[in-house]
Length: 493
Image (tube, rainbow, N blue to C red; front, side, top):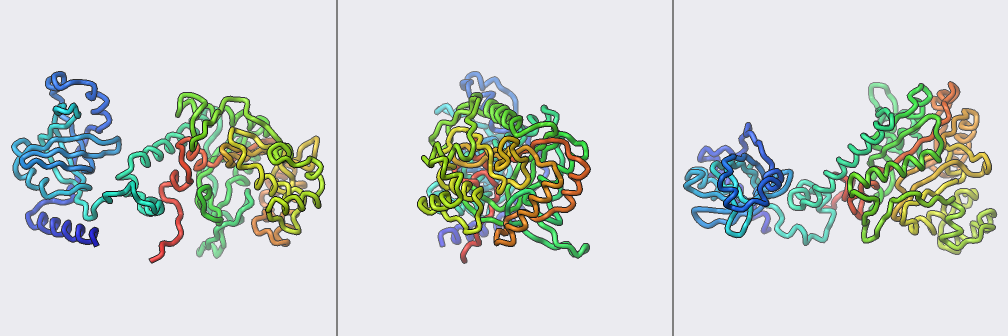
């Protein structure tokens, strides 16, 4: 009710201003300065030094505070770089402009021009000589934003979140910088950025449920991609030996602090490389990012100090279960014993699950959360790695790793399976799993197998979750904090 009354009063102001010919949403104003630049240049100068600065500055931003003293007022305006104070005086900006100002509200967007000065309290201030309304706000800003307990309100109204919480904006500026740094790193290592289809006739490249749509003109069902992998490897087959893509994937899965149905990945593939090369490359990449962002390999995430100094721990799936969960190695070689252990530890496994899947259930349930410092977990079972090359010494596992930091997967990589006959066999195994009830198992992609029959060079590839990477480098607890508009459940009316 309080908000409704405020909106009614603001609408009355708007009607009154319009009746007097005041333009509420003008255009064409030229703004030459930013608040942060002015602060950087003049914050250290005293009022004596500022008195000789004759430069005139033009700024625009949202009024975040108003202190009215009758014939003069202090306001705080916020632009994309921060906040700065301005002083408005009736005899300086003119009576007509000042009378308009007196009827404005916190949240309105305004333009001002003037010189800089320091107040008696030492606050750097724009001494306004010109003032103009640029955009009138109808709705008031929330007064107790930081006290809201329903965090979903922040996500549903991200525009308000950005207005009143500067730290939120900083997260997304850093996100943009991280993506730029990744592009620069990849290009400096001779990788070519490419784009592959977002809508695909068949979903592949990952174990996930896809979203389905329909193309009317073609009369064809299409799927929002769950991964770009099979298309990127077609490019490697075609002679584009180093490629990468930063783009969206879509998976019809649950929503949590670590999962969003629409998320950003960087996938890259390199001919004549192995999963071991990808480990070295990943260490180099993360050290580069940390150096650019923090200036050192150490940083704090959710109260824990993370150290990216190399070499990072490298441990196989089975070794990790033995070391972190105190499980006898013999149990991991026996399907019956492994299944019993999963039950004893409260982990659900399906009757049809082979030993490899049971081992992964044990790993995910008993080990993942304990991997705080950067850890490459290697040698995943063949059953859960249908696109990965088998290990030469132990064909039960693959030349694959996942990178874990702070208990969550950040990256997934492997030496690529490029034998078309074996790839077809792996797809057929996946089809059997689908028939047994696993609707996330891969489908047979005949076109991809056909591409492999033209000979794909030995290669390795990797996928890095950009959202989780940004969470790590911005100390964000939830994936929703690093996606501007995360998917949310329908709001109950």
